[in-house]
Image (tube, rainbow, N blue to C red; front, side, top):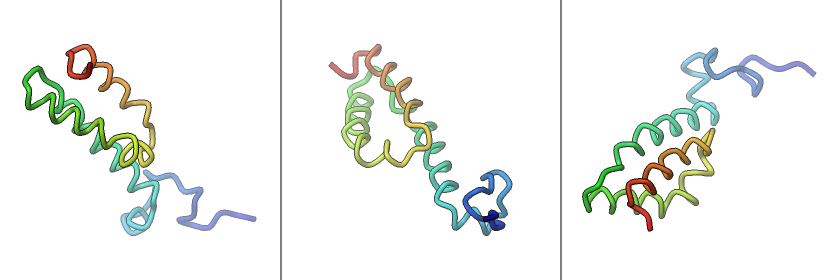
Length: 88
């Protein structure tokens, strides 16, 4: 049983734009990059940063982590927040 062109065996970086629009893996990769770009910007010592980081952490376990391609990368951000004293 061979793999069809554009099927589940095709690497994401080798897909055409049309194929990537219909690929769940492609959407998950973009979603992951977006969150990994956003999270470091939520870290800081002011109260507004603490509120944003706390809100992000509240929704992370159900709404974000299950959809990331590599959820362990979020641990760096959580560790940084703990080091800054944002989470007690």
